Image (cartoon, rainbow, N blue to C red; front, top):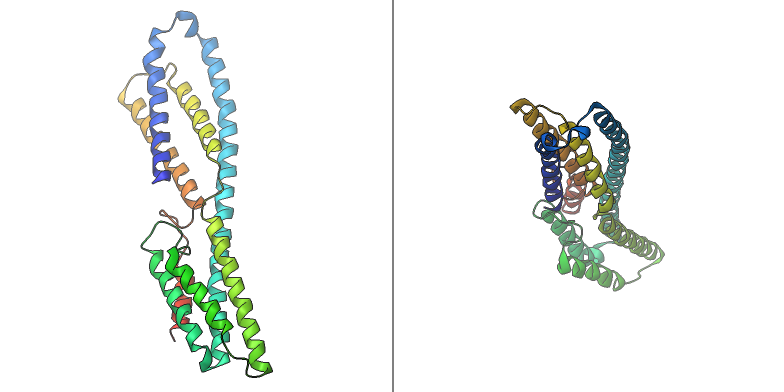
Length: 251
């Protein structure tokens, strides 16, 4: 809901700025409505237009990098879960007690993916308990011979990788675009739109153009912010890797 609120504020600001300028312009003194003043406003608007384009480009690049990084880590996370289960299978029937909470944990992550707007990898205290139980049961496995000892060490390493990837995904779920940058971007866009209303004709076409333009820009900023938080909104990381991992564990 936070990104939607930001987009709504942007839309309202960009609609209000030119309409306020249209309403105020006829009441200004004549020296404030001449061509020289209009030219200065246009130059300032062009300057901020270039700066706004640069900031939008940086925001898009930052959101894209965040999305791709999280997507890569989700694939690595699912792969580590599959390899951990494969290692436990090779250990033998003694490791079935370890595989039970592992399968329950993956099942919980997969089911939480479509039911919450938060990071599904976090998924509350029960998930923490399941991960702790995996480690506890793994430490209780007997050392039968050198081959089983090697498999046990490999399983412990895989579990550490799963825990590391989990915390990396948790840290990456909050986004990387600073809010002050968004506030400054809105101020620049408001100034640009306000300059559009200076000496603009009062008719339905002009007002409709301002409204549609504000809606499109607000929508674009919303999608950028949504992509920067990959576990919520219309642009989300696919749950397919975790679902494939669950299918592998249930075979």
